[in-house]
Length: 532
Image (tube, rainbow, N blue to C red; front, top):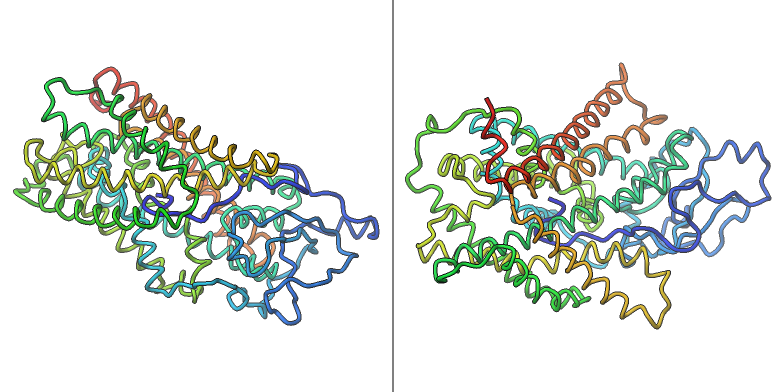
């Protein structure tokens, strides 16, 4: 999901200045003995006054501590960084335990903190995007009853992995006395706090988190272009003597975005977001009316399909449900962050609603249209019906406006990683060039792969199985290694290994089957057509 209908806090591809990507931190200052150095493990931390806990930077830092300065904590917006945009990499003794007396939530400085209800609304708003329209297709690749059970199972798994990430972030915040962290910050800090063999990979894991976030979000933008082009074509083909090719429609849709995506201030995009939300809501409600009209009996649909199609189901569902890229942003902005996880919690309630709605649409959408189910359920609506045509155009326009918001995030991540290498007088033109190049890239990919089904499955399986399952599990293994430990019989270790294996299997099979599906689509068939 990676916030399909909103904007996530942007992380950075890397920082200029003191840190080189993938390598170990610089050597400590010469004032420390060799034995003392060997007993230290570097860690990312902000230099806050630990005595007063005011959240502001200390004016003086013990010069005997080895340190180097990163230009910014790129995963946390400057206005949210609790008064600090210059976190330090300090040292930590092995065996250091979480400081239970330090409460990071008390030291967060957020200009406009969100209440539990507001956070819930943001979570629902970000989750109920275009992914919900692909859920009937997910059930097509699973079967009516298997899809019902598996959607709840995958949804519960995604929610649990979010719990893992946020819980580890809270532990690291207390351990390092940092008010808040972004996704990539948590991954980097976990590797720095983990076994020595992981320390040198801390910058690499940060880089990989940001790379997969960018790939996920760029992939979503490509899917948006295919979605808009397909729905516009479905309507206008009824009024044209010679229908245009879908690839030409994607090019037409991309052209105005070249101008719209030059807007760098989110404030000017807010009205488009409001319009998109209204259009999406109205369109989905009307789509429900069509779905529930004259439903066939469940016996007319396959209860379970051939296992060769399951990876497509997995990729589609995790694409629709996974919000791992934005949860830290939502949690960091909360007035009461402790209410985000736990039982009951904002996350549990919000994800329960999301999973229920997605399952509802998937189940009844597949029950209604069966083997004719398309990549977006709107494409199954009657072609000649004027109301159905208006629904397609409304949702297409909503996704079109959402593109600019979704596009803002990968641009911010990439720009923060390269801006320090560009001279001041060339920064404006360089940023505009980057924006135009990325829009053209998205348009080119969408033109090359103009099919919603395998595209959605590909992004979900590759990017979100990595971000949503594999990386959170690795983070937990690193954070819990010494304190508080893996538990009795090392159950946490075996559980995380299971999640990692499940994520890798989903990654590999989803990638493989999506590629086969693209090939099958180009040859005019379907990957399940030859299944026994």
